[in-house]
Amino acid sequence: MSIVISETTDLDTCMALRFEVFVGEQNVPVEEERDALDAVATHLLATMDGKPMGTARIVWVENVAKIGRVCVLKAARGTGLGKQLIEAAVAVAAKRDGITKAKLGAQVHAIGFYEKLGFEVFGPVYLDAGIEHRDMVRHLG
Image (tube, rainbow, N blue to C red):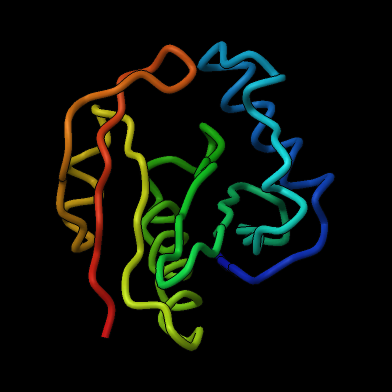
């Protein structure tokens, strides 16, 4: 199995993956899934054996890399692809001048996954697209 994760400008492929996971599986309204930040974000695309299987985006705000819209197709879950996708996003963030932390809003069921990758929970539970989330942070450097 060959996994490649890289920055991409292929937003159509990223959006198709996000639509399948967020809109199709999680019933997130399409108008909430897409937003103006897609135009300014850095997008990552993960492929397995050449087939698009996951994506994430990074929005840059002052000294913070906000990792979001992280998704992996059902067929690739449990393969380690999600872990590699988050590690790739953190690596991209760590290379950018002035960025001191990575932040994300984790669906509550995924908190343990992110904790294993060095993220720490802060703040209360909140709803995003009707799904319970908590903010998490990982200090860089």
